[in-house]
Image 1 (cartoon, rainbow, N blue to C red):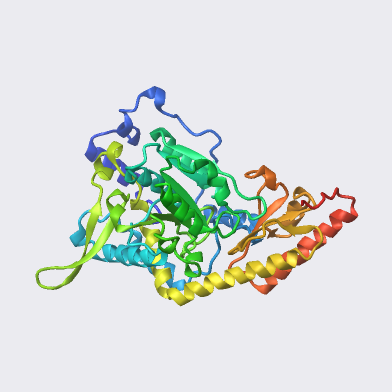
Image 2 (cartoon, rainbow, N blue to C red; image 1 turned 180 degrees about the vertical axis):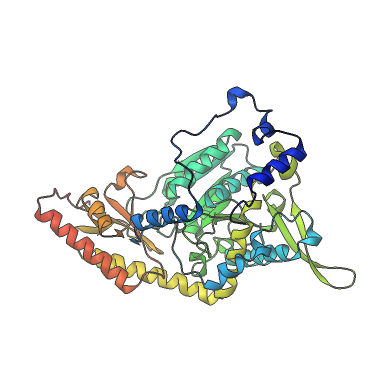
Amino acid sequence: MPFIPHTEEEVRAMLEVIGVASIDDLFDEIPPELQVPGIEGLPPALGEAEVLRLFQDRVARDGRPVSFLGAGAYPHHIPAAVWDLVSRGEFSTAYTPYQAEASQGTLQVIYEYQTMMAGLMGMEVSNASLYDGASALAEAVLMAVRANRRSRARRVLLPRTLHPAWRATVRTLVHPQEIEVVEIPFDPRGGHTPLEALAAWEGRDVTALVVPQPNFFGVLEDVDALTDWAHEQGALVIAAPNPTAMALLRPPGAWGTAGADIAAGEGQPLGIPLSLGGPYFGFLCTRQALVRQMPGRLVGRTVDREGREGFTLTLQAREQHIRRSRATSNICTNQGLMVTAATLYLALLGPEGLRRVAAVSHANTRTLTDRLVENPHVHAVFDRPFFHERVLRFDVPLERLLRPLAAHNLLPGYPLGEDYPELQDCLLVCATEVHTPADIDFCVDHLFRIIERQTRAGCPIKPKMA
């Protein structure tokens, strides 16, 4: 329910039955020094209509900018049927299927999701879901350390071309387990991870190598060479792919000679709307040989003695429910609704529909960035193929561009300087299938106009980098 329906009289009646005087008495086991008496600065209570009006005013104040941000959160068209079905009570109130025989619908949804994700990634097995892409990658790192018994170093190579937030999350989650995370530099011309950057680790004990595709800059990595190099060192390969891109590119299971060992990433592009930073869900796929190290749960299809089809929890770690210290994962339950949306999204689009989404996204990004670099003060930074994001450098300082553009309801891209100091005054520009020719014209026209205004006003122009 969207609200709590209990009246004050009903609350008093319940407390009387329980045998306590107030709701505060239900928490009397908490020591007084740990209790917070109240929240300072909390405004007076509002009625439902007043709260609705408040949020509408806040939304209007924020505006509806034309956004080309990307950087791990992507706007895609979601068929209306997806969330119309997901919002049904049978899905929206479903919980962990502890009693599998009573949860056939939930189990079938998970089974269909796992089947489609395994196919999309070219892997043999997929779990139900994880919290988000960053924590899914951290779980994949932990899984690789458990699975690679030949390695004693507990050392994982993490390219700097991976999403900065993902790198930070991996470090946070694996550091307490004494896993060494080594960041690998990227090529300044190509924006990718070259084999030369791995030369220092040739012949040394490496547990796993993470390979994004495409990487955070939108650049396509040389996944075949990286995969084969890692396997030659006795390391496992953890793919971190964009699921939409996998509709066009070779999936992780087909990388190199033997394919990646694990694929983990963010499922938000598959039917999850951008809504104030979430929700998200993480996916994780692997080879059959590593299935017992996989976190989360696995649903299988079977038949009973009378030949009737049914679904069951084939594999899950019991410890994740009762012994957190021994768990392979303590994440999975709360993302079931997102998996349901992704299942419907993939089913409605089908393989051809997803390929079209990926192709149009790439085409729109190419159109937008090709037009932008026609301006003499805008330059493409990297010279390798890209998917639906591209890094552009501006001769005009970004702070002179972004503020006036925001005033015109335009967010032209994600500034990279804070995460990559060597990419100061660079924007990561993204377009998908939802961006129209009018949106692209709007972005190009406003950017060119602001650049011209700044140069006429005597704004210092930085020389083009070699």
